[in-house]
Amino acid sequence: MTDQRILFVHAHPDDESIGTGATMAYYAARGAHVTLVTCTLGEEGEIHVPELARLEAAQADQLGGYRLTELRAACAALGVADHRLLGGAGHYRDSGMMGLPTNDHPRAFWRADLDQAAGLLAETIREVRPQVLVTYDPNGFYGHPDHIQAHRVAMRAAELAGPDGPAKIYWTAVPRSVLSAGMATFAESSNNPFGAVEKVEDLPFGTPDEQIAARIDAHEYADRKTAALRAHATQIPPTSWLFTLAGNFGAEFMGVEYFTLAAGTKGPGTGPYAWEDDLFAGVEAVPVPA
Image 1: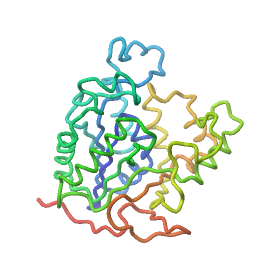
Image 2: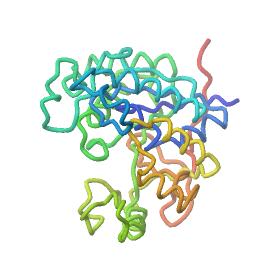
Image 3: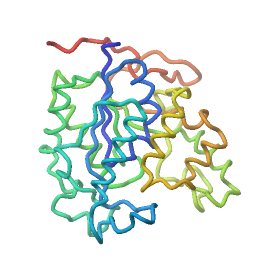
């Protein structure tokens, strides 16, 4: 066991597995206390399991409860025991994609009062006392309103937590060099996640390699990430490009994740850009007071 504590703040069930699953499994296996806070139940998600189609928001509106069971299974696969929903199950609702009428739902996370939502998260921060917090960049990685709001809430909560706040805050990222390699790999594929985009610079995400702060090589836990992705069956079909890459490159793709440093002091690193290989680099492990 260690005194390391790390908090991940994500918008919907499945975001944790797609963006940070390998990192979560890596630190959980090392004995760190890994906490996941999910801000909504993902009620507005598409459904890729035909027999569950009527759970969608426009019909039974039961998808959120079902996705909670998927989230629990994903966390079990990652070895994460401390999972929480911001404000409790159903407190905030999935806002849907930017510009849709669902953005205006009374419980839409996009409409949440920032200080109120951040105050709820700050309670968790004061309890857990994480040295490291991981969330999205100001654009929510790709522009989804709930991702943007999760970023705002996480950053404000870190402020509200004061001395109990994290020593370092990271934002999820993908280096442009990795995206370029992915675009080349899928160039002739019918399952191309990049669509008609031909240049990395035209994507709504992608970070210059020199701006990346950390690279977590958790390839030995790639199978746990893959299992967590499969747990989110309503959202990630077996034909997903994620599994295509996993089949072609395995742990080399699924087990490596990248981050930029938004707050705190960068620790020692290696390689041409001195990327950290540990999100706790340079952080002293301080026990939680009894």
